[in-house]
Structure formats: structure tokens, C-alpha cells
Length: 526
Image 1 (cartoon, one colour):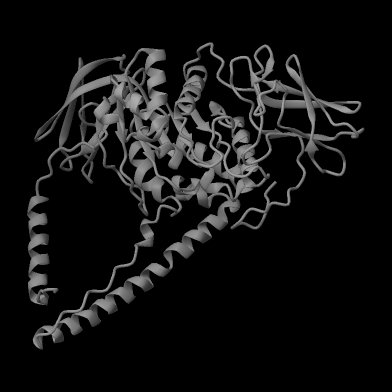
Image 2: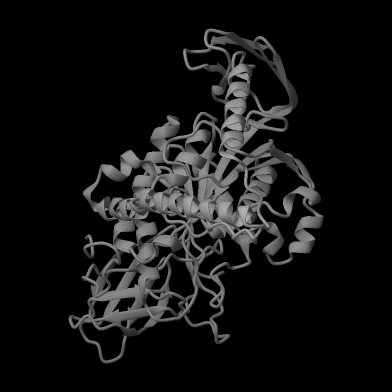
């Protein structure tokens, strides 16, 4: 049974709410965004922003340790001041004083990273291998974790929902596994507090995490904006339809109530497509822009599956995302470290090898690093459970790229080739004193995963042999080889590493046009 409220009653209630909000809004207390709260970690060695809202024209004073700075709220009530540079340490107390005073407790200073992407970044510690043991031993009070609540928005927002927690067995279970294991490795390596801001959403493409202006800046992204138009265009019509359905329902309910009959069930409300996680720029507006005043050291990123049907477009899209984030943070070319998508599914070459290639190409941007995971995926699960190795490899990249440490942080990356008679010799960057073949899937020492082709462009399995820092590839019966591919499949068998135990990225030496055509685009973009 559903009870009807009279229109007069509804209007009166709305009027009361509006009046109440108006009275409460006459005086605005000093407020801070959720990131600036108890337990936070501030970035060491740089100026850090402290910001919030107050009455227009109100003076706000921020005090931390021996620093005291003031600012004036603008006509919209927004204010911002800078502290620092700060040295690692804590815990400290920060006060923010205007017409009221806020005290932020347990503040640490150290290293801050943003962890973002889709479901493999979202995947919780509770779902990894040895989860019970990992959770039981997660006692790192100076590793602080902040999870951003999912929010899709049509325009840039100023705040997110979330809070800081110290890493304890009772807090770590639902946190991003990759984010946690990365932070744990950094904590051990650097011996300073670490803060990880986790902002990811499963099943999302890169364009959801990019600004609208960047998507509008390149004709290659027109198909993405077309998708947005299709996504949003039905909404006004569906909203009107629902309104009409509710009008008809009210009439039927009024009649049933007057006649003493059963009231009909109200119509269902359709999903608001404006809140769809696939909306271009939607997650950027709701979950990234509100973070960009917070000083960070860098970003770790695990995504690509959501764009695997458009690998050629991703060649442009992914670097554009990296540049976009660096632009809005305004901290220069901060380190952007990412995970190459793992092995999964069928062996047959499809779109995933080309997506990995697009990710490999993004290393052309400065201060980027890639954790190769072609050896730790799960053929039957798109969410492999070994996130410890992922976090470890990302942390190696951070030590080498962000902190300038003398560590081996990359597996071999294809550099060049020479044809030597009926063989092709491959050379690599990051061989680090020699290549090695791990035990292959059949238990033998042979190098596997290589294919070779002649002018006919038909690839077939090849014999490969390590010679120092090079690999020599050939196939009996092929007198004039032209090109080589390695691990070129969704779920390949491959086993080439450097002596540090880091795997070689899948690659191809050819640039032949592929039969694969990007879905939802006009075709390959070379």
C-alpha cells in the first residue's frame, strides 16, 4: 500500500527546506576537503597546498609545526595557502583558524602517490593469494591509505568522499591490493611515511579519466565524444517519460484511494545515464580533479582492459591521459608508472597484444615506467591474484625513476634487429649484463615465445637462442627472415628475462598493417 502526500503538503515541505538551508547558509564555517583530515600524509620536500571554504573575505590562518600562513577567502568562499617545503616526520598537529578553528591530528610528512585505473587496481587485498596472511601482518602505522568513493560528474568537482586510515589488519582488507603492496615496498625502501590515495573504478575506459578539453583537442578522439552524445541524449526524453508516468500513477492512485482500492505500485526510475562510469571525463571530474591541489610524488596506474578493443586509438589516448594529469596537477612531469596488462584468455593473437604494444609506446614520455606482468597473469581470470609482484615491480620503477636509486627496475625492452643470413639478431635495452631463459611451461630450459616471418608476413614458431645481451632467432626452411614477434598473443607462452628476474615486454619488429580494426572508430590509426 502506498500513501499519497498532497501537493500542498509537498510544496510546504520544499519551502521549509529551502528556507532552512537559506538561514543556515548565512554563516559559512571554515571547512576543509576530505583529503585534509586526521591521519593524512603530506608530500615532503615541496610546497603543499592547504585549502577549503569560508565566508567570502574571511581571513584563514594555517599553522603546522613552526609555520604559520594566512589567506583570504575569495568572492566564492574559496581560499588556499601554501606550506613548506616540509621534512619527513610526524605525527604533527595542524590548525586551521578563521571564525572557527579546525584541528587536524596525526599528520605525517613523507611520500604521496595516487593509485588509479580500473578493476585490477580496485581489486582488494582480501582477494589476493595468501590474503589471510597478508592481512594478519599488515601492521604499518606510517603507511596511510585513502580510498576515494566513486563519483561521476559532468563538471570538475572540488571535493571527494573518503578518509585516511593507518594500515592495520582491520583497515587493509578492502584497500587496493596493488596500491597497498606498492606502498608497503616504498615504506620499507625509503623508511619515511607513505600515503596512497586510491581512486579507481572497475570496468572503465581511459577516456572516463581524462578531461573533456583533452578529448576535444584531438580528432582521433571524436568517436569517444560521439559515444558521450549517444549516452546522454536519451536522458531528457527518459526524464520526461518518467514524469508523465508519475503523473498517470498519481491520478490512478488518487482514484484508487477515493474508491478504497489498492494503490498501484509507482513506476520504476531508470538509471541516470549522466552518472554512467563510461561517461567521458566523468570520473576525471568526480574523482581526479578534486585531488589535484594535493601535492604528490607521482601516480601508479593499472588500466587498459577497458580500451583493448581500440588499441590503435589507445596509442594516442593513453599518452594524452598522462599529459593531461600532469597539466592539471601543475607539478611538472611527475613520475607516471603503469602496469602492462597481464596474460589472460585464449592464446590466439587478438587485440590485447596490440594494447600492450600501445602501453609500451607510452614509455617515450619522460619519467614513465612500466611493470610487465606477462608472466603472472591467470588464463582463466582477468583479475590475477598475484598483486604482490605487481606492487613490487612498480616500487622498483619508483625507486629508479622517482628517487634516482641505482636499482634494476625494468625488464628487457626490444631495441633493434639485424638480419644475419637466415637468422635475425635482436638487441635489447635493460638487459643488465645478460639475458636468461626461465624454466618454460614444459619444464625445459629452452627459450620460447618467438615467431618469425618472411616477406609473406606469415608468422610461425621459431627457434631462439640467447647470445649475451642478444637473442638469435631462426626457423628451418626460412632462408630470408624479415620480422620477429615475441609473446604476441593474449595468453602467450614466453620466458625471456634479464638477470634481475624481470620479464621482457611482448613486442614485434614489424609495422605491418593488421587485419584488426578498432571497434567504435574508423579503423586503425598508424
